Length: 395
Image (tube, rainbow, N blue to C red; front, side, top):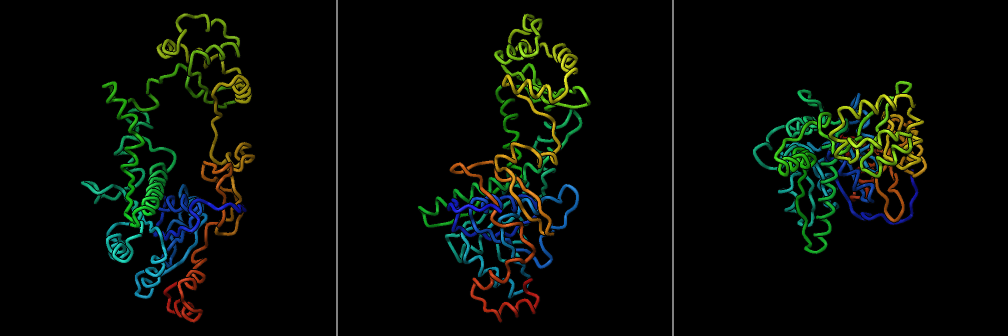
């Protein structure tokens, strides 16, 4: 774990979260990485995300680092008492369960604000209040109905993005709203409810394509079929069955590219003098470049593009990023222990504060790892804690 003696921006802020899966936990992760004490309240069986397989296996360790875990039977009277005492110490409550679930537990904002007008309550949902808010949403659902899958896939073949983009960004916007509410509370003395939603987040992601239509009057084509604004902006299959993305996005770069590869004939061709000319000539220009560049391997093209300052990117599988020299040398990966005891590294937030990355203070917690110490901090005696364990109220 990273050692850093500098005070973090949200040090002293306590967050109590009732979250699972990705959206809510992302909000807590961002706040925790920024220094807040984030306490994850789990049912006795644990957050179901802990047990996911396949593409969900990485959810729990990634989005629950830097947090503490307390496991409580919230359906019992004694369990609710524990939770309410914990919330009474919080600056922020964050949740991403169904509204009815939080209401039944007496943990909705309307109920909690009666006890503490300074409380900030972050609610992560599928939709903001409106005609759709009764629906059950998932990242893939809103990608399909919100135009993102249409833009990602080929015509007639909608395809979800290759990451939980709405869940992650929705959690980030929840965190942004929470920090804004903290700043406003410093002036007004009052908290508020912050709402973030998957569907509205997805609309923000495709807003550029909506506005493209507003400006041009022409519907945006799916990304694989779009008319690129750049003459060369493509994935190329090259020697040894490798792939690389290459871009030449301006007239100056076109000159650099032609000089770097000795393509004087192309540079002199008045059909491709300007970027717009090259866009219109893509039908013959790109096949010509594919044939010429196929003689190189990926390393050779990478080296030449890097030498002359042209944009390029080897096509990389996610697992290979653990070995990425830039991530390793710039501190972008922090050592972490998984809940089962295995060691790994984890990507950090993609930012620096005062020249330093925001590191790992706590490994993703084991279920109920901090139950006893948190109960004691709330005033429960050792005998009280033992009784709560014996009665099956806490784990």
